[in-house]
Length: 232
Image 1 (tube, helix red, strand yellow):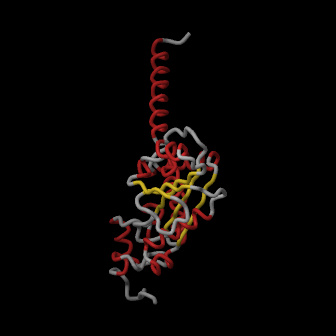
Image 2 (tube, rainbow, N blue to C red; image 1 turned 120 degrees about the horizontal axis):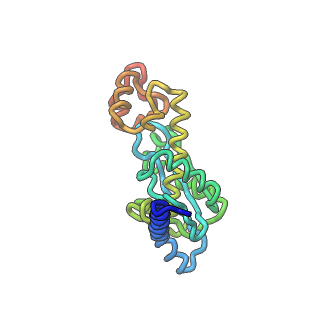
Image 3 (tube, rainbow, N blue to C red; image 1 turned 90 degrees about the vertical axis):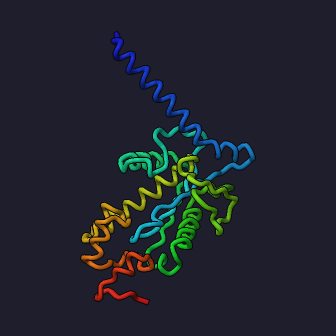
């Protein structure tokens, strides 16, 4: 027979589950409105890596099954690395479709980061196994999107589909930066993922720039070492 303390813990766990279900249900608000208007296949889309000084920009598009309850799902920036990895695994199993787009440093420097991000998003949409009839995006509209779209400011914490895409994009890029860290260990990419941290800036001052640094970004081209001239 359960003790009073155990019964109290069970009630607390049950209440926590109810609250989490209400929170996740609220994240379906935009998707539910679109389904009510007759749209059938909804994709959420987000990117990771617009701001770093090094590495690719990655976009993800995710199509979720209607009404999915995924405990803990949120904007990837609100989650720990461990939480993101766990949710990424669950999304790989449960999502109806996931598309990834990756644009490398050479293209970022050639196109500029905004156009490179749009290109990564185009790739992500093209990689989906299902054709969406509506896309929800984080931030701003995508001029090259071939589908109906709605851009949501802070969409990754307002739409479950965008939140899912933010997790997939972030985990995918973080893994890529960890792999690149093994090739370019001096710069510590596994720790800062290419972002402009004091440690990263100090490593640029000490070692110069690597092949995966974005030479069109001011903190990089202002720090060129004489033996690493800016190439055409």
